[in-house]
Length: 364
Image (cartoon, rainbow, N blue to C red; front, side, top):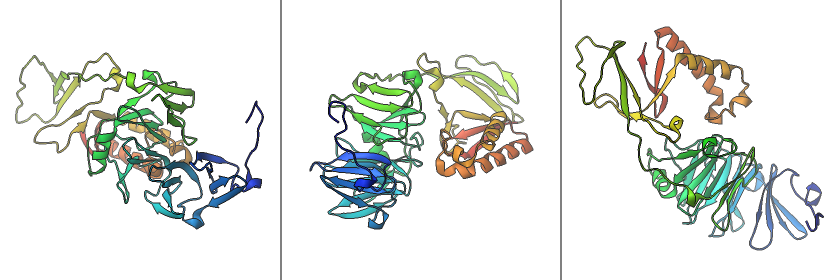
C-alpha cells in the first residue's frame, strides 16, 4: 500500500491455491511464503509456485512458518510439521495441528501443538515436554530477553524457563514450573486469540506483543518481578471419623486402632493472587507421588456431566482445559465417574497430578 492505495494483490487468479491466507513469511531473497488452506505458495515477482500434500506436506492446511538460522524452512500443518531443505520436504510427528514454530536465541527449535503441548527438536525428532503444568493447547510461542518462553493459551499467557524446558524434554516425567498470567495480572482477556500466524512477536527493544480477543497486549518482560517467598501452609482443622480434634502449635494427635478416616483442612495465606495458589502433598509411607490439593465434589461432577451433555462434539473440542483429541471420550468418562461415586456413596474425589485415573476416594 502507498498513501492508502493498494499497489497489488494476490489471489486465486494470480496462482494462489486459496484466497484464505493463514500465514505470511518474507524470505531473505525478497520472495514471500504464503500459507493457505490448500497448500503453501512461494511468490516471487511475476511467479507463484505451490507445494501441497502431493509434494510431501503432511496436510494442505498450512499455518505457522519459520526460516531457521541453518536455512531450513519449517512448515506447520494440520497434521504435523515439515522441513523444506534443498527442495526436498520431510514430514515429522507429532500428527496434530502445529500452531507455532520458534527458534530461540540459543538456536533451539520449539513446536507448539493444538492438543499435546510443547515439543523440542533434538536434531532428528521432536521430543515432548511431559511436565504436568505444561498447557496442552498451545496457540503461539515467543521467547524474551531473560531466557523465558511465553505460551499463548485459552487460559492466559504461560511463562516457563527455556533451559528447564529443554532438560524436561529429555526426561519422561519432570517438574517444570509454568506461571500463568491472566486477567488478574492485567490481561484484557484470558483467551489469547488462536487465529493468525503469528499472533505474537518480540519487538527490537525486547517488548512482547500478543493478540487477544479484546485487543493487543504489550508486555515488558524485564519489569516483571518474581516473588521467591513460598506461602507457608498451616493446618486449620482435623477430623477423625467426622469428629473434630482440637489442634495447637506443635501438638500431636493420637489415633486409636478403630479410627478409620482422617481429614485435614489446610491453607497457605498470601496477599497476591490467593485464588491461584495450588497445593500438593504426600503422605509418607502411603502416597507414591505428590498429590494435587484438588478435591472434586460429586455435585461438581454432576454439573460437568450436564454441561458436557448439552454440548455437541465440536463445541466440546473448544472447552478450556480439555484436549480436543479427548472431546469424544470425556463425556462417557464423566458419566461413569458420576455413577461410581453415586453407587458407592463417595462425595469427594482427590485428584492427583496424573489425572482422575490415579485418584483416591477420600470421603463418604
